[in-house]
Length: 411
Image 1 (cartoon, rainbow, N blue to C red):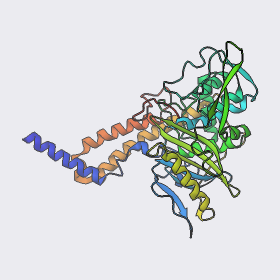
Image 2 (image 1 turned 135 degrees about the vertical axis):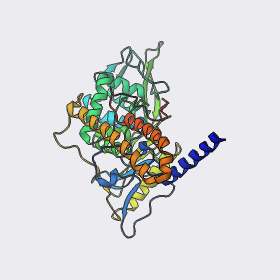
Image 3 (image 1 turned 90 degrees about the horizontal axis):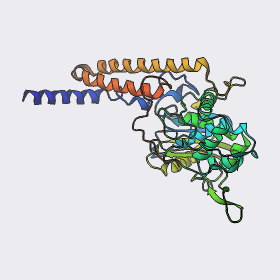
Image 4 (image 1 turned 30 degrees about the horizontal axis):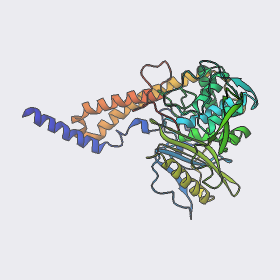
């Protein structure tokens, strides 16, 4: 009886503590990364919806379920509205935009490459494929169509091997992201396939799209609806076959003025999408990450694009997409000493924030908090581990696997 009463008392105390301290005990992975410099403006580092309407401004679309989203003017870089802009989430195949920003300028479109044995060996189970085969020749432009239209991880891996290998390409992508000011992004695989610690944000994905659209080839590939892809040789005729491929972007050709840019889906990431559209001389960018269902990523992108065009001149910007400083980009393939130091400072900031949050929560909860202190400390210890997994770099202690990560198939 004593044990039952004691357990009931502890449960009641914990329930009271939770009700009084809900904000203090919010899941850490939902917050902007600790130690984040306020890239793009202070408001974008805040949780929740950020918008500054003027008189006559349209209301934001109702029923948005994306865990993070952002609407920006592609030319001026002004962020018109956002929710959890810097929250770090698995990006899925939208990370292929950063891959293209990094690798696309390195090879001419008409260069031909024969796929060597082993270049497709490291593809993740369930990867989306365009159908690249070993011992066959492919033009670079065909491989890029495979990347953008079919979200082909096989095409990504071949281009990465042409670029010097997977590890070298990942390092170059990380350096490119850092140079852009995309400090929420941690690259593990070049194709966006679910991997331990692979994270980005709505803000960073918008940067990748904005930079990519300045490249004529990038813009051409991401706006292509259909194309043919080279197949195998017919053993009888000696002629090479081909087959059609279609862009997996569900808005392309259906939303007026849509340019692209890239969609993605994995079991862990859910749906992610960055879309760009032109109307009346304006180009808007919208990023949506992790809505409730697969198709909602397109529905919510379209609704936010509609809102952005209707809100012209009727909202004040809440932030800014940064431009990569001229001459400040790191040399490809190396993050340099300051990259490692910066990641160390971020890990330390995570420790400090989580430890401080535990004591603040206990203080706010008063007597109920004292009764539930042990449980709170356990939760905080787990939150600290999640924070370290989210921000720690390769070689750190502990896994970087996002909570609930399960490798899955790509869109």
